[in-house]
Length: 256
Image (tube, rainbow, N blue to C red; front, side, top):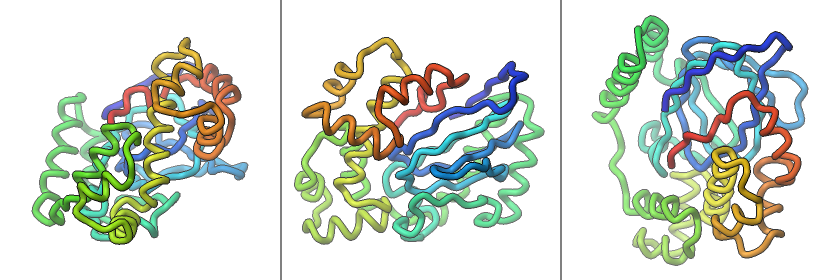
């Protein structure tokens, strides 16, 4: 996903909320580098040109600056594990400078992206980098396909069903899920459902929260509000006011 936004603002930082999503990601910041404020912290931390983001459970706030041109690579379930060969349970709420992971080739890619003429060139550069990584990619397992099905169903499927599709016992499924996804299956399913609700609100701000909760498969308002408090850090009504002030809807075009 390529995002380009020139924000006209002379009033200081350009702040956008960014709650967690079910996808692990690789971000490239081509123009202004963003700054991230972690929950409970006062300072905004300047990010590298390219960032690997593991499983996220905590909402952050982004200062996207005035010229925001970025590429986001979203991985299917298990994709980042297959690329890095690391247990994602060690990467929860942690991000890494991609140049530290991929070295000179990532540094060169960041330079090429800044020199790229248009979006087609940007797309081709990132795609070619990823295609090169296919040579060393670990194979997909049945659990990866099963967890993708959970995502497609917006988390509204029993964990027993997904474990069955993975050809694993519940105990094996739980262990493999934490290794390849970074989270327990039930927590991941909740995050998938929440993300659907949040993206609906970004795309359709006039739809009521009750309608969104129903569309996303929440059984009652209590569970809906609890998920927003856990993953967005605030109740839906408070988040609504913050979204109304945000200059850019950061997850409106996100595809899972």
